[in-house]
Length: 310
Image (cartoon, rainbow, N blue to C red):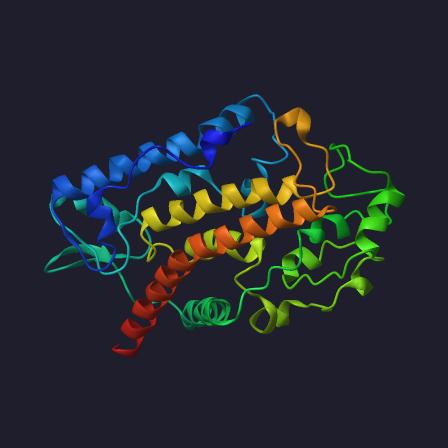
């Protein structure tokens, strides 16, 4: 089990804590850049080693496909919006999209290049704000993964064995109320499972339904952090990635798949103790995600306020 992927041992550089408007000397920003590359290399090494031999891990590699992660993009350090890099060495950042030279130094251009990009930032902020303001719900018990195999001989992770027969999976699903509020999970429900869900979700329903108790909503913070680059400081992107790795493990442990051979004991949500365990993780992830979400909202605020001053 790639447990080392979930929480890197590299401590965040004190310089990187100043996410809003730091003025960085050459020594400061090159040190932050090097520490970022070290942190990313530590996180991605198992994935890259597997990929080099055409291997694939059904738990740990999922995020790379689901979010279309490109390792080289993650390794590329960005200081974040309002940061200023000093020194002639910083001029190499001008070869990247979204950077500019000012009398103070090299920085990310705070203004979106197109109206479409500006509206995307506005929509992301609306979703993040909606999730932050909506009360968290902790009653789904990870049944979305069960609904993805319900009454079907084909399922998403065909290479993995199930802990139960098809009928036993169905009995677990039918003994509960499906209340998935995340469209990207709901869309993978089997045809027979969809009518059982409390919400019939479409992509247009995200703002009305997504909520911060949902594992996938908190995992998605990584997606929004990436979409907001280069405005998002890289330290925040990797903080979101580490949280997503941890969430993914719990997500699959609570599923109907048998992952014991891979080193993952099940969270038996079909039992009362399993439900309690799952809810404990949900609450912990919601707490860890809250400050990351707020920082992403601030990134959006900075971008949109810069646009209004144009």
